[in-house]
Amino acid sequence: VQLQASGGGLVQAGGSLRLSCAASGRTSIIYAMGWFRQAPGKEREFVTSIRWSSSTSYYSDSVKGRFTISRDNAKNTANLQMNSLKPEDTAVYYCAAHTIGGTYYQPSNSNRYGYWGQGTQVTVSS
Image (cartoon, rainbow, N blue to C red; front, side, top):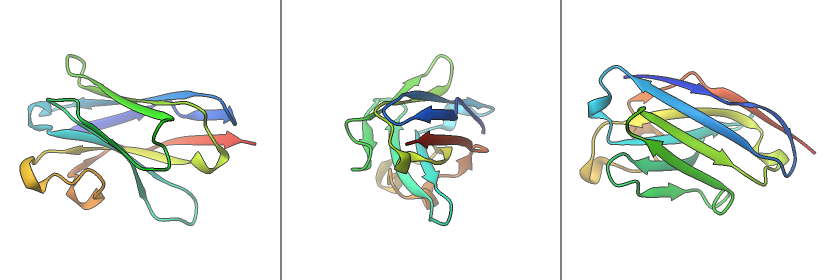
């Protein structure tokens, strides 16, 4: 599975951005897709995840109510709509694919994701 993230950029606080993650290759094995982010000097942190078949989604407390993840199965794409952006949302955003379901699926555990995209920079100015 190959993942290509896009849509990052520079936006003022309060603005919006939409990220996309296009999956290719053996997309039939994708169980869930997730977004993580890493700010300078900080560890990578969970943002959101969505089950591919049911669209059940999970969010970190820091983005709940502001970010929305969605998926387009026909296009094998996971989208992240980010609204009401804050300077603390500034980070490199990575999409990832989870290929094992059941109890192995832990939405916020980055170690359970087997495939990663290259990252896209999001910068929110104050």
